[in-house]
Length: 135
Image (cartoon, rainbow, N blue to C red):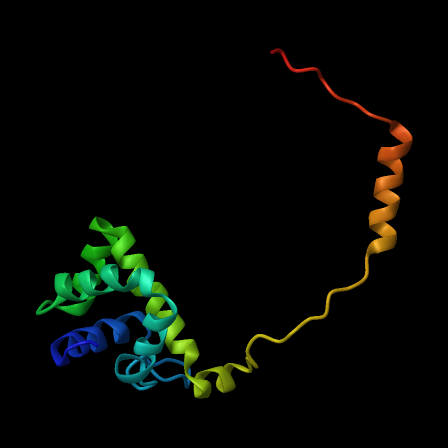
């Protein structure tokens, strides 16, 4: 769980990364800092330490300047923050609906056995080709 201070810091950072634009809500308007970041961290626990490091590094600073510094001086931490922020934003069903993204859809595998068998017949016709190893 994130502390209130961490959420406040994150809210400011997330709104710099995803501002309100072209009728799309900002990250905080889309509940990223209060709801969706928790879900994203469940999906990507491997990014938690870098995410918390980003919040600690940026706490109390101007968000835009802090992000610029982080991007220049600690790219892996900045990347973790960016991945989690963008992922959290698109977890919000309202955002997915606004951009017309239905989510991942199952796609049945197509039967390409004819093509595969054609490729194998070329290998069979060619015969074995190998280089003996030196041993």
